[in-house]
Image (cartoon, rainbow, N blue to C red; front, side, top):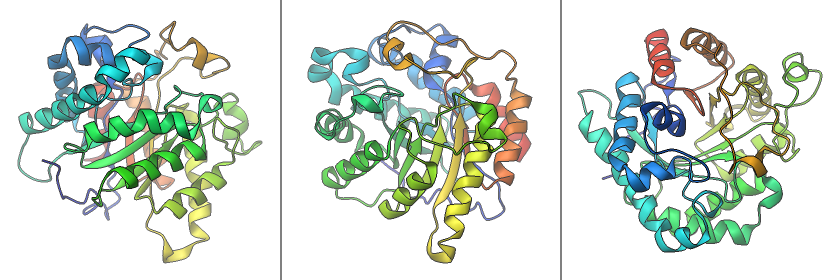
Length: 326
């Protein structure tokens, strides 16, 4: 059963909540069934036991929150026919596996939480493929499947404000509970140097300004706004930008901020959405656990309440975060 625990009940000491890492690459590392176009959904269909093991790997490393393996349960990855036949079933299975992993790793103290992943309906980094109608047809069965298991909702890798707004609306329409809703935007990281040195404003992959996205998150009354699947070098600037917006609202907002960056070797995504069914992006071999923890320390100082990892960030990175912030 979903937990009623409030995830931020004990973060006043500025110890961040630790989110898990990238499920797909962890499955790949484990030797689980993994290929394009199915991505992490292939293991969900063929070796669900390894999906549970991957969750447990992140929990053992120190994750406070794990995310359901439902990101690739969309037609973009598993095809229209398979999604129509099994989409809700696979989402339900992903939630069940997450709960099983939490039960298997249950220890004394604060319980771990399960975030129900709501992916971009048109594929990663493709705001041009988004329509509210398409999103409703895809996300509604995912919400139904995840509802029995999720402690909170996480609409992640959202490339536009409209994507996030639609996911939030569909959850409100489809459920009658008050579970927390987190939204996470992926950012335009095609020119990291310009963002690091503040020569250009931070934007979503849609081109919308981050300030606009933060205001939208406040209007939706989200519990947390995160930035994910983007270059770790730009996340500190994104956090500073978001904090500036929040300061203009004074004490009227309790919105939490978070980061889970990716470990890609090259973050230039022109055309990568179209190629997401054809290749597996290489990872940055220099992004060691310690280097990632160093980034995370800067994110904490910039106001991050939640820190985790996306593609290529594994249990070893999470363990370094847990040790660093313990």
